[in-house]
Amino acid sequence: MDAQILQEQMLLNCLRQQLDEFHMLSSIFCSPGELHVDDYSFVDNISAFIEGETKRLNAKLDYQLNLPLLGAAEKVQIRIELPHLYPGIEIPLFVVRAARFPRDQERLITERIERYIDREVVDKSEPYVFQIVSWIRDNFGELTKFEEAIKPPDQLLNVSQDTKSDNFERLWIYSHHLKSKTKRQTILKTARDLDLSGFSRPGKPAIICVEGRQMDTQEFWRTIRPLKWQKIQIKLAEVDPAVESTGGCDAVGSRRRFQGFREELFTEVGDQNDEEVPMSMSLFMKFLDNHDSGYIRKEIFGFDQVENVV
Image 1 (cartoon, rainbow, N blue to C red):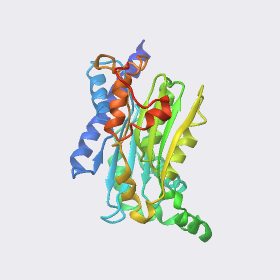
Image 2 (spheres, rainbow, N blue to C red):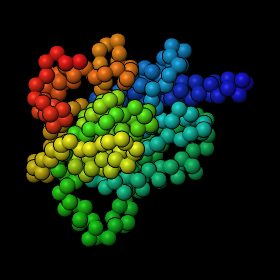
Image 3 (tube, rainbow, N blue to C red):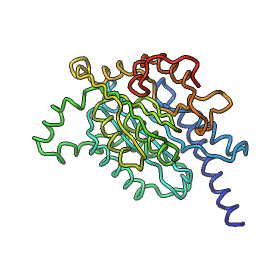
Image 4 (spheres, rainbow, N blue to C red):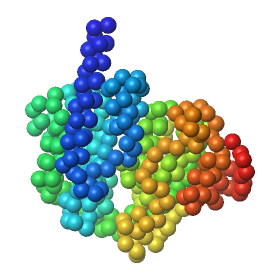
């Protein structure tokens, strides 16, 4: 029992430090768009857990900094995910993303950050996200200059000429069911790490929509497809190859129909935290119509109209 109490106290202390650090960062990176949180309910959930108002932690705290490290016209995303026992026992995950970085470079940057944490952060019992962010900002050129050195010239040419990297794609994915919390977290984390927008509807049936650069939507599919599914398939892939000629990343953003990526249950108010409750078809259809996506009802369900279906 003493060990259990100690673990609980350690968890609460870590979560308090995480929130204190988050609020401190919010005051530092306070310009519009500098610090972004996909879902503030996660912050509220951690606060409620600390205060004893709930015994359930829904997710890890994660947020994103958007900083002009490549010039004012191109922001660099620094994605930060905090495990529950950070600081002290577990280390945070940093993912640095920019439009010009291929996925393998992002992994190399993450590995360099992890080595820096291991070697240079002396006191890991205190929060150190700001220390890492400051180090990334101060050493960004050194952190990323090996990009051309690790790729032969012909590979660099292929990356720049790969039109799929600039195509816009929207995938509509259908599965028999989605209940596993591990799968749900993997879907959320992967979509957010890849800067995809859309939604995931857990339960039975499961419906997932992701949209963004085609290289990222395909990476999302490669990540989730090997997970254990009774049945999963892409119902529709919408590709717009015109993005490259109309402004690259900005054009990708203009084609998005969803803001961010989150779970949607499409249940009535009293059932919003229960994925076992059947989906309200009328709410789902209204949601699709509000996002100019009503046509997908035929692809998924085989019909065009729905009236008072729950």
